[in-house]
Amino acid sequence: MPYLCEIKLTIRMFSKNKKRAGVDLEQHELLENAQFRVKQRKRLFAHFVIFLIGSVFLAVANKILKYGEAYDWFIWAIAFWAFLFVIHTFNVFVTQRFMGKEWERDQREKLVAKQKQRIAELQKEIEVDFPLSNINKKKDL
Image 1 (cartoon, rainbow, N blue to C red):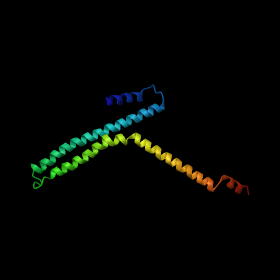
Image 2: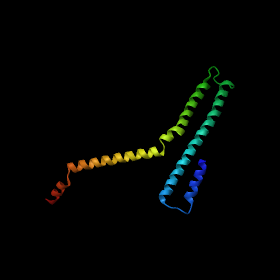
Image 3: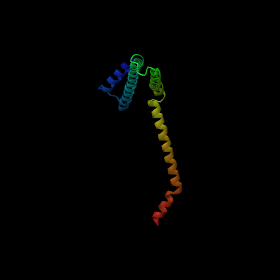
Image 4: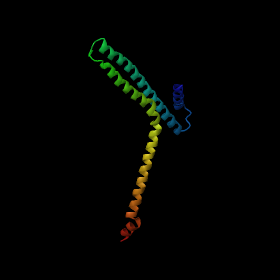
């Protein structure tokens, strides 16, 4: 179903009946976000497949090929790799929901508002320290 939405967005983007530039920008942003999320999930699934193949390889190397057979080191290697995979999964499915595009936009807007407030405060300080009426009087002399 998500792919159908992407196809519809693509068709709307390239259709000849364009209503407004704002709508096209919004659709473009939605499409880019959808493509980014698909790439993230694709990388996660690739990571999972590599994890499975790598885990089997590590177990085979330790048990069958008898590489470091005195100790079952493959268990620790697989556990560490599983921990990294869990972090990757958490980042894709949880963190991106809370700290995605909307969160970035909100943070940007807050920082811009803070900067504007600071600039306004500095301008007030300058006007108090160096009023325009005094500057004009000095020019007249």
